[in-house]
Length: 254
Ligand SMILES: Nc1ncnc2c1ncn2[C@@H]1O[C@H](COP(=O)(O)OP(=O)(O)OP(=O)(O)O)[C@@H](O)[C@H]1O
Image (cartoon, rainbow, N blue to C red; front, side, top):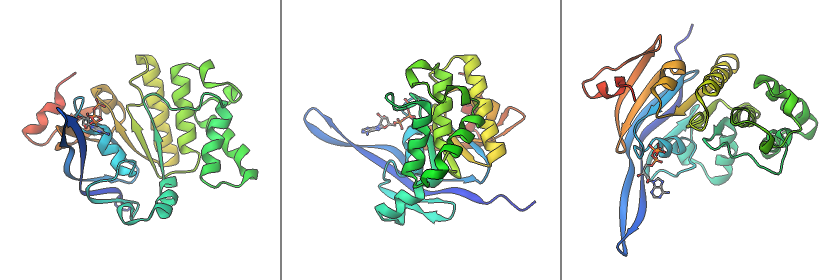
């Protein structure tokens, strides 16, 4: 087997936000300069307490947040060098799922998935088959004509996964995808993500504050604290192998 190639490379990316306090403008650094590489085929976790900068770092990976400095490279393409049109095309390589699912409530399950294919420029004739294929992967073919309000949380998130993987992305970014779900639904959803990773070869980055999520499906995980990257750990047989003093924080149960 050849060595795994780099899928996502962050080089010194950082992000500041402007805030107003007592009538004054303040700058707040949500993500300090971070360099991080995610390998092709990995499931990579982003861990840390609330406010650590996990979501911001995830959103920097597809430039949903523009970094104030540094470069973002996905599958060899430097996203931070692209113009808006090039970026729109490159983003088809990066799917995303959200904590609150973000489905369109006035569209059926089928239409929600189909919409993403239209946006990605899929030929009309191919859309039906591709939607059904993706609903099959997440085990939802029998819900194709239902509306989001008629689905459970776990089913809604499956639609989110189907929608995200439909245009065949190389990367799937998942922002706390299970935190609105109960434990057994969470387990089922994590299995689905694992399947998507193994069968389709999609590289996954998952933001979570739950150690169990890291243990169950991640190959590696990064610990963030106040915008800093403290540690990157390996996950071997459900054990998180931290390598430095500071990284011991990762091993604590929440
Ligand atoms: N658009 C924004 N404007 C101003 N501040 C922001 C913005 N987005 C995020 N922040 C701030 O940046 C910091 C990091 O936020 P972020 O959402 O990345 O953290 P997180 O680790 O994902 O936290 P949580 O687990 O609570 O979602 C927080 O202090 C947050 O308030």
